[in-house]
Image 1 (cartoon, rainbow, N blue to C red):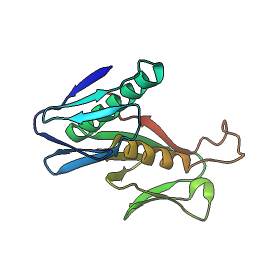
Image 2 (image 1 turned 180 degrees about the vertical axis):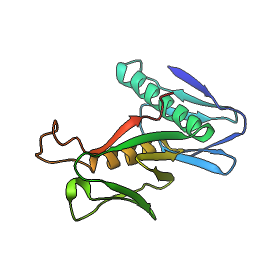
Image 3 (image 1 turned 60 degrees about the vertical axis):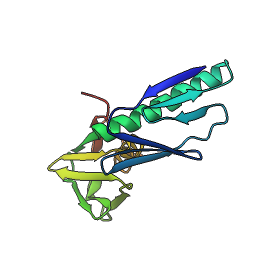
Image 4 (image 1 turned 90 degrees about the vertical axis):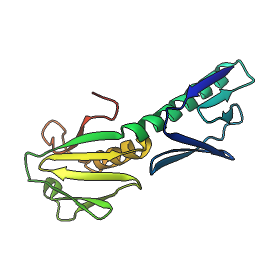
Length: 175
């Protein structure tokens, strides 16, 4: 089985061992593809994925690799944006960005602040009650947004009463 992914104009593709790197202008993304089921051949205008097996696992791995490469292309062309909304009813929550950390203060009246490390290549901005996470790498952007959302777990409080938190309102692939 073989699948060809066309590379748009203006991109530079390189394969170094198991690492595939895509470059457009000054931005670049690098990802490791290390499955023994799939072989990757790189030309100037395409990436060819081949496998010897016709079983389900080989076909699934080609589909996974295809999706990763297309996500890298889309990330370098358009980028990814996730929007989160802060919600509080009991105590006014304060969210701010300081260096490479997001700091949540006064969550459900807690004295200590909660900190989330921002992954490399991702930027976070806070505007009133909206938190925006942007970047080129879909995995890092979505993981940073998920860490921000998960940091506001309420523990054993009743979620019907305590609805305070930071919630994802718009994902990376949504219009």
